Image (cartoon, rainbow, N blue to C red; front, side):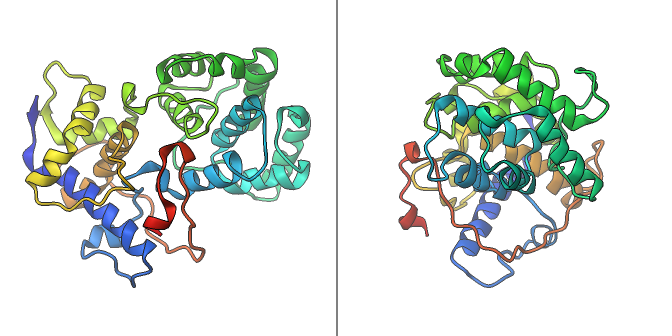
Length: 317
């Protein structure tokens, strides 16, 4: 493997500086939270995936909302939410059905709700990442095929029981990715979110998948990977983070005692790719611009983490 040293060092700078922004916002310090003009102007995901707004919504409203659900329903709720990945779509379902469970899941009724939303000009999918779309189940509209997918997974195949019996994240990943409309990246996101719950307890450090954005970031960071895969590179970053932060004299403040996980290191590569489009525009890729500018949100996030992580919320609030 041959590093492009300036970009490799930029990876660690970005991870640390984006995390510093998180802490400053959490402690209600006034903006700007960084002197980095690129980070001031554009929207970037957190260094820790779990701190992003949608992940926090998932934790507080889908997984740990104060109600007791069967293990099967927990998995169903997570997958349904992540298919659309949009808080307002989840609220649509709650407003129309009272709650989201396998017992009240009816694809025709859910379709009516989504069709009405679309006809009213309401967006039903998050555009953070594009989910697969084709007519594999015979429907003209993307959401009807996704609803049919959910029926196939949870009503016809009882996929939830198979997931509950999985001993590793990779086993669950292989089950989920075997379905149409689910690519490798989406399957990895889903098993990560399922592992936020307490119905499974897979090791986070045994498996990772590089998404398209991560692949672009790795290409920018390394002249050559040698015999390593993208996943090997992500693991290398995970295993060497302490050493590299120290080498660069970067004070990376963790969430509790939790280092960046494989999923986080994967995401940082994706964000590095975006950052380099402005910081080092001569480093070409098939993406030239950053789509989203940073817009402050009025509501403050009250952060929570999966209880099994044993993170002292009060200590970081």
